[in-house]
Image 1: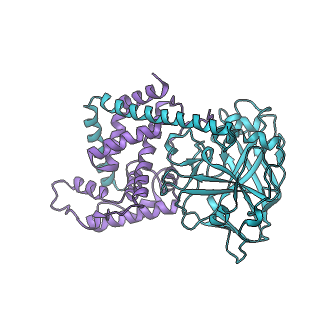
Image 2: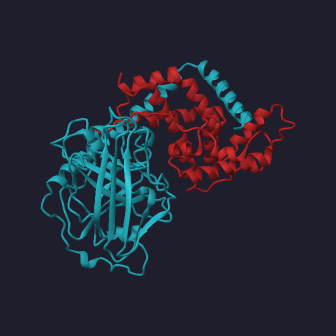
Length: 319
Length: 186
């Protein structure tokens, strides 16, 4: 390591630190606190408006995303009609993979509790600034990631006659009795659509859902989380996520894709994964990925559920 | 006073010097460091309960500085921009500079924001490329490319001051920062 460069940076930091410590800290605290207070007030106002929208049955919001677990346990009657499907453009079968444009023209709002036999569950995540970070953060609680779109702000969507896939084989192994709780999901996905499906390799994640009636408070936060090798790192830091320049994985039409992903956490106690695995309740896993775009920076990110036509796969305790 | 306000005040009073020093290392300018520090504080406290331990708050603000610098560059790409690679143009001469250290710092601060952030994280924080990538949400290969480009630029313009290209992207330590996870959104 370059000692000269390290020394130069260290010296500069020390000089700046000494200069700062001669100042009145209030000159920094008050302006920052005022800006934070304004932004937090704005967020509260936005949350209130979102709640009103939910009451009106217009859109999913953060609350309904959080409550999506309920839907998967007791799904309501089908609420998505195929009416209008014939008006959609014909499926492109020139060998090109499903694109966000293909999906955009098939997008219909997915309301809480709805199921669909001809739609692929998806989410469209909009970014505040078109050239903003194209990734999606798993949670909004991490303030350092607050400049990214978060899942709770994504719009739940059906992609009618979209990329249909089936999970043909799967199994789960988990361990929580040692110092490093982990859960591994091994699966095979078949592409039943007539086009290849290309998704960002690093974006594939599993979503763990628990029965809200059968789990403790300790598990609840975890049930709201999405986890994967990239989203739940060894330090227990829910971090993002979907690299904008990731290479795509492609499942050809009729082809199969097999992989394992593992969720881990750093310590055996005091974390949600350990709590989940030690609970005497089943949980459900679903797989999601971001549709690959060569130029990912933009104002929307498209997530699709893989194996969406499968029934819920509840994993009993002890699997 | 709310939890976040108490944490913010304690953080600035107890860790403000170190965080401002880090902002200065990233920007090379006192006013820019002030702005970056303020922006990072706002990013770190505008969501969540804010009643985090000081170590976690320190880590959040530090990371927010890094991502703010990166994001500023990303957003700037959407607008007409000037060439920021001043290191390739106006090259101070270390031989005649009153202080070689100052010349080296000027060189670092002339690098584009992404390269500069990676250099600071590598040579000030001592992180390896994998840890930098994890922290910034970039691919490890991308970070190695930034480091390699930065080292090449610095070496080309400032000669041998001990930078080893191999060490730049293969050396360093794994990150040990633990950030508290709070999953309850309500």
